[in-house]
Structures are given as structure tokens and as C-alpha cells.
Length: 73
Image 1 (cartoon, rainbow, N blue to C red):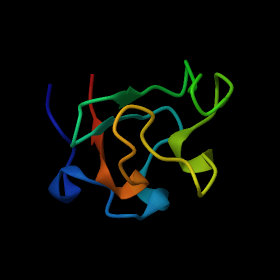
Image 2: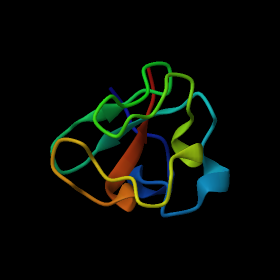
Image 3: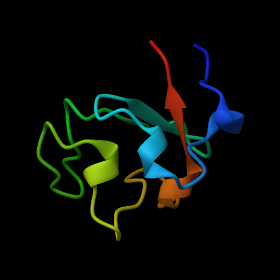
């Protein structure tokens, strides 16, 4: 698994994230996959990371959104 540029993080700039991109929490390694959504926060499948509500946090460790890194398949 490798990480895209920008220092392994999207640095809070949502314009850098593809709508299909999966992101991984750098604290607990939880992966947010838009195809699956997030059952804990009741986010429906098909919701891109950039479209998550502002109050969304990692469902595993409660980390901030800016703690997520874009991952490549």
C-alpha cells in the first residue's frame, strides 16, 4: 500500500481528493470507503469523503477528518 503525495494527507484541502478515493485514519488505520459509507455515523454507501458532514469523525478512534490519508489500491 502506498500513499499519494501531499505528505500522506490531503491537508484539509478537499479539492485534492477524488470522489472515489478511500482514506485511512493515520491514528487507528480505519479505512473510509465511499462504496460502503459509514454505519456508525449513518452515512449511506456512495458518499464521498469530501461530502461527509463537517462533524464527522473517525468511527473507530474519534480522530479528526484531517487525520485521514488518501490511499491507493
